[in-house]
Length: 113
Length: 109
Image (cartoon, rainbow over all chains, first blue to last red):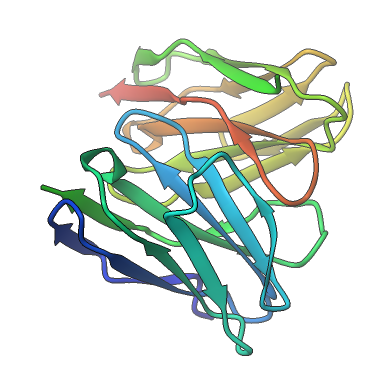
């Protein structure tokens, strides 16, 4: 049973560029959440998608946007990249409103130069 | 403001030397306290969910406990393969988790 799949695994972008990260949730899960993890820090919640809608958002600017597709997969888009956006971006899937551990993917390591 | 604080930041243990990791939280209306293990370059791996004070859960050499203000992850007779960063997270609701900065555990043979 495949877990959460993220692509690409690594990415290098230049300041000001735009990036799209992709996530396929664990089979059967209908909710996708995105987290940003800076080096040496814990993950920080960006937003969550369910039924193709953003359900809740953390303290991230509008440069961060997302999308969920009918097959529950999701994309995270970041516009006008800043050096401070360099981080590990984690996708986590779950069942909607079921309290329990997320299943995380291995993440996309984004480096902005 | 909801917050999760973990201590110590780093812990070095000899193989077989038991210890505990601490997670203190101030999360309004906590609905779940989560422990994850994270290996370098990987995503967090779910370990435990605790829902109410007094609850305990065990998995191999790990045991998690919860009080009204903090949670502990006890590691009994650790092995080198237990080396990882252990993350604690509080969930005020099901939509998002508030993570601590983690405890980096190194176990030496």
